Image 1: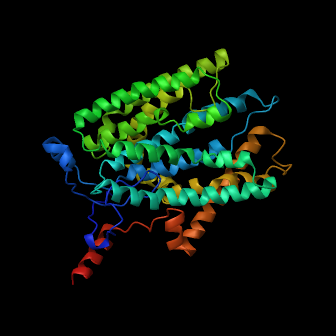
Image 2: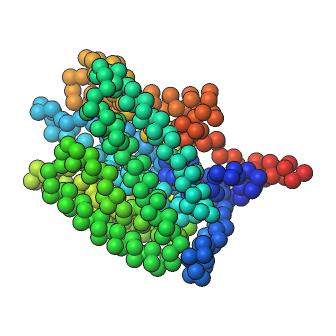
Image 3: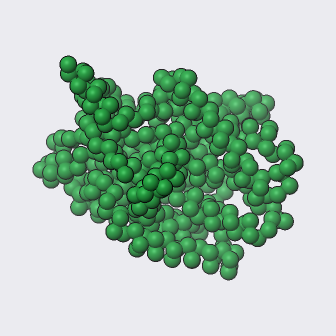
Length: 414
């Protein structure tokens, strides 16, 4: 396994670009940073802020590429038909249990990388994030609005309502919550690690209570829309990511905890299936205590599993598609609805009689077609229009090998 450890020359860092703290869907740059603590952090903050140099984390590439597959799969889902065989419904619930961990993983990675952020001020940090996150989101949200206006015959109050709730295509709630958490946690990032640990424990309790509240409620309409945008529904994953990033700086700590984490996932999964098969209490949304706890254990189990798979040549080869997708994850996230899961699937897959007579076959056909076409679109855009794609799709330039960077640095010095 190759581990990249390189330092980005200062000349290659733009004034509006922070060295650390890339958001979760963005390809992480292999940089190292030494962060000076802010005056408000005091001596304790200074001691912890410079402990860990930023380094490339290969596990995140795999997790990012895999998680975006799960995100698109969830959005291709529609309710089973009455005649759908039980085996197909059960298979869907198994897939959904793992797929629902995707967004928690993204929040965790975002905060973990944020722990290495070196922005000198909130204003500089905010400007960078507006450019990298908010502008692409608003651009594709607006395109989605135009698409729906065209499809539905005009601009209505209903469409404006959903646009203002960042619900015009469904998936943008994640960036709304991410922006809120980024702002909130920016002002606690210099806390001592011990205090961040206590914050993560408190966030877990609040998050669990919030999930239980929504699980006990009837979720529909605007209430459901606002529930997904409630930061308390996701706060633990971000708080835990920041704590882990500040305390450890790497994911090596997950490896000794692999088996306990897998055991925890297995226990929660057992409860999930007993409730579903025995009592008919299945959850196809994130608002279930079992899914929340399963996601919590996955934050430890997934990175450790990826590490062990990457230790072999066969494992590295098997993970290459996920690593490839990592670079395009944010772009796929931005565009897949309603253009690919929506317009194209409705036009080419839903009417196709070869697949539309069986629920499971149709759902998977919708997923495969939309994912392949969305990926092809963003890869093509990244190749043909790299600068525009970097601004509006978040497609970063390909990461250079350390020896190439060293050669470039040497040439610059010469």
